[in-house]
Every structure is written in C-alpha cells, then in structure tokens.
Length: 90
Length: 278
Ligand SMILES: [Zn+2]
Image (cartoon, rainbow over all chains, first blue to last red; front, side, top):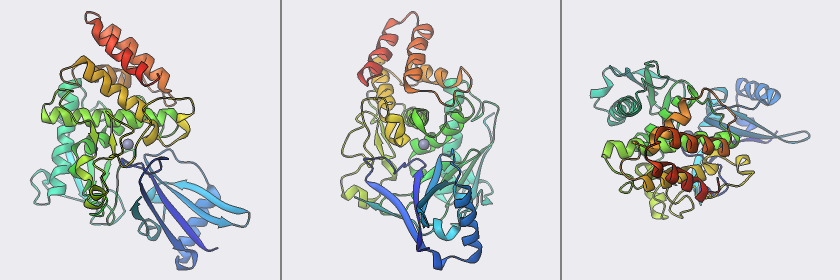
C-alpha cells in the first residue's frame, strides 16, 4: 500500500467542476498513518458507501485489483489526512 | 423574535461544533462576530421577505462554527450547522467575509427542510443554484440594491491575493457563468447529462435563469422573482431528485398564478428559462 489521496468536493467552493481552476487535495503515505488510522481507513474502504453530503472527500488508494475510490464526510476521515490538503490554482 | 444565533470556535480543530463562544454578537474576534450577526441577518431576511421562521420554518437555533481546521479553504452545511474555514490567505480569505457565502450555506439548510434536494445529479445542481440565488439575493437585500445594480458574484469577498493576481474575482458569476474571472466557470446552457457533473458546475444555467428573470422584471430581486423561487422551493414538500426542467416548469406556473395581474412577470420567467435551454 503506497499512499492515500484525498480530494475535497463540495462546500461553497465545489472544486470538482470540469472547469475549476482551484483544486484542494493531499496525500499521506500509508506508512505514515497510525495503526488506528489505518484500521479506520480499511473499514471505510471496505464499506465504500456513497455519501449524500454538501462537503465530502474522495479518497483513493491502490488496492490489489486497482485503485479503490470512496467518498466520505469529514468526521469519518482521520485528521492527519484532512490536514494534508493544500489548495492550488491553475 | 429571531432565532438564537450561536457561534462555536473550533480553534483549528476539525471536531464540530467546537467550543461555545459567549456573547458572539459582541465578540472581539471579527470572524465570530460576523458569523453570528450575518446568520441573524439571513434569518431576518427570510422572515421579513418570505415570512419564514429560521432554517426549518420552526425557529431552529442557528449554529455556526468558525476557525475550522487550519487554512481550511471552504465553508459548508453539514445537515445541522454552518462551518467556516479561515482560508489559506492566498487562494481564499476568511469565508465569513462574503455575506452571500453565509446566505448560501444557510439556504442549504432551508432546502434540506423543504425540497430536500440531493447533493448530486440535476437535483444537486438545483440545490447549489438555490443556495447561490438566495445567497446573492441576501447580499442585494443587505445592500438594498435593485437587480440591475447587483454584481451577481458569488464569493467576491473571499478571493485571496494569489487568486486575484491570476485575474479571478469570484467563485461564480451568476450573470455570466462562463466568465474567465470566475474560479470555477460554468455552462450557461442546459443539456441532458449536465447532472452527471459537479453540482457547482451544473448550477450555471439555473443561476443565469434567475438572474435574467430578476433583471427583466426589475426592482428588487426578492420582491417577485425571489418570491416565485421561494414558493417553488418550499411550497410543495420534498422532491429529492427533482430535475431542472421540473423546477423550471414549477416556477413558470407559479409566475402565472402568483402574479396573475402582471403578465410581464411570467413572460420574464419564461424567457429566462428559455434563454438557458430550459
Ligand atoms: Zn453549496
């Protein structure tokens, strides 16, 4: 497992529009996560449910059969991942 | 008379709601004070203009959390409260600085308690558009502007210096969704399949339709166009998967029934939707 990517969707900014110039995302190495955070993420990825929420995050990690992608609301996500996010403008 | 407006300070943590702030309306922290006073002002706007008592129509306490996380570049409604980031100071400034952003977030709560629109599909685009529409209308109401004086920008006051340097002046421009000065330009015309894209993108056509209708009708946007949109939002019960053509049809029909003696209102609403392909 190499790293987990987190991308911010929604809120007032949006940021996932095809024409958006602003992108908020981050990466955390799997090896940098605590055992507790890894377990939390494993459970989240296993559940993989869609969320209907104003602000949500897309989490991506490489699984054995290719990339695993889920969406989650902030309270479901380890703080270290939320804090890895930075914003860029293109 | 107006619902209580409570503010919590996250002190840069990500746990909501955070620590309650005593007497937020008089806080020395300008962010706390703005979140409190502007949320109250949105409640006053909904009461004075539409006769709605708070977010749920039943005097719900307004809860706002500020200083969420560190350099957090967003503001959101989580189903129960508003939350504002401080911005990173480069792309975005403190999200409480734009009163239309505060109106936008609170309106997500009103939509949740009325139409109950989802956050994806065409319904998601309508959900975002309704928040932009009422956010912008609230800003015009605070400034006592008529529709033709308004700039129809969303988030103009939260744009940071780096974004400004690159020529961006707002998140979205309701009057010109495709404009290059918007951080996230939008289509200005509806097409089937638009609902598969981000709702902040698909909200472009209904945003432009409201702007065109309000401008053509003239006067204050909240007097006629706003009352039609409000009735379409709150007068018919939940419709979580409503499509854009359905919403357009509802406002056309309301324009006729609510302003029967002023056919120009229906004509303006009809022409506005037609212009955006709906
Ligand atoms: Zn929104």
